[in-house]
Image (cartoon, rainbow, N blue to C red; front, top):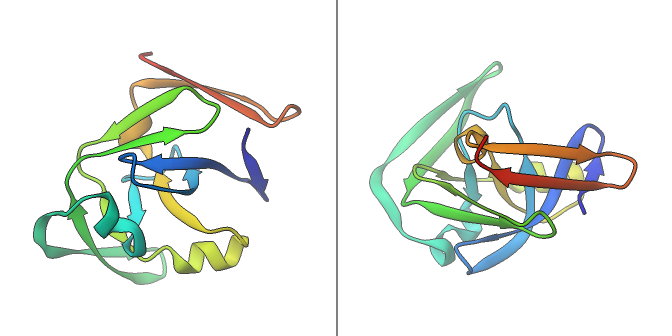
Amino acid sequence: PFRRVGHLMFVMTTCNNRTTGYGLVDTGAAFSAVATSDAGRVNGPAAPEGVPLRGVMGNVGEAVRLSPVRFEMAGTGAKLVDREPLAMDLEALSTANGLPVTAVIGYPALQNSTLVVDYRAGTIRISEGK
């Protein structure tokens, strides 16, 4: 089952079998991310230098590229891997949505999957492979 906040879908997500919280399923995100507060428990950085992030409103902040992360989303049967996720501050996302957000599962993790969303039942099914 997923939790819907406005147009956003959140699923309980475990990252690398080490930390669990809500994951935002974002098919349009150019990258996946793990909250900086959880990144140390998930895995270490792949590169010590920061990755500057810019959005429509300008600089968003800085992130650190992580080693590959496996996202397991409760009730979906999916175990998705992003080989180059980022660690970034997700506190504003958590505060704005009233949920402890651990991850953003973006297009790189979802690209080889088929998503079936049943809004009435509040479920999401993810099949690996297209």
